[in-house]
Image (cartoon, rainbow, N blue to C red; front, side, top):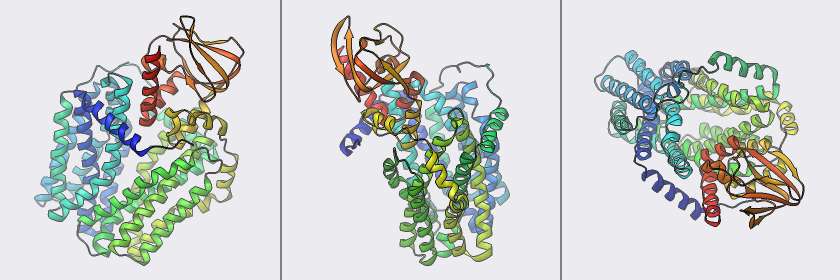
Length: 549
């Protein structure tokens, strides 16, 4: 198993930051994105605190639903804008809309405006938020000048996203401690306005393939729904993941109640409690590396459920500021283990040609789950008080697991795991640090290829269409009919033509009977450009091999 050197990881991050900030356009986009993610998380906790102050948990739940439902409806439509217009202009328009909506909410809050208008305006802001990520995904690849820059941008974006989940609620807590929820909206409006200013100078190229009709949204959704209807294992796992989002939605609304009503602390503590949950989730990500290649994922899933349940039961029994911070962090850690295990199982059991649609449908269900959770926690508080609500949230995921019962173990037992292929991919540094779901998906995409002695697997000057990994045997590397290297088990080759978009730079010939696994170009390029660790290692390998050839 590959071991990650912390110093090497830090070095990659520093190099990534230098690369991104060396490209003026990427620098602007990433700084704007930092403002966006901070505002997104900050204003969410602020509006829930405002709603709780007016009408307790019930009104906080209503406020959440009022924002989530419209966003769930408009998100699929606005997601296509980046493909139909200049993505940089779409990004700019989204930031302007968000900044204006946040400013309007701030004015209403600071001026004592009617609550109904506050919630309606906040819903407009939430709808505008759904513009940003699709537009970013269309814009960034057009700004990167090299694969190294694209990889570096992914590194920076992932750090920004992770840190925002942890830090922004805490910042919102400080702002509410010294001011009010209105101050949070005012500050975040200014931040997003700064993001709009930065992104304005980056319009992006004309949209590729404009005017070409794609599959209608309704047709794609219906096909994914039919898979859930016909595939019981996938359906059970999606229900489990949906329950996870219900619990998250309930927890979001409970933070103000727990901080203010139960612990008797200030408004800012709602943000601190949210940050504690995020801190536990962030810290537990490293634990999921142990899930790679495991034949059985239900045991760690159950362990995550148990940790989640115990944390909430103890919190209900001993609600103090210190216990709340610690136990919410533990609950966040348990939830991440469950989430990664369940998502990996979905990829194992879903038909290969339906996985993307399955996760697309899951993302749509997530919004509905958050809204349901917001309503559920209000009902629990009304029925039995805060402690009952805390225990109820802790029971949601274990009860969903119990409802699946033996079927969950059956899914785990019969799910296919390409253990040999996973081990082979993990022997390559560029794939060693990939998350479990991605690594298993790549392993399932490999195509075996037997090459006898003297078979030319790659011919110098040809177009590149695949990346190869050697399972057994050897490959002789030749350039202009001169041998320049010999590769053996666990080595990969063919990446230069794929990543540099050039003809093959050398020939690769089998020496003796050789077993290879081929990974098609699109799958390989996606893996190394969308995952920071893979991209960094691939770029180092390409640079080293270019120096030799």
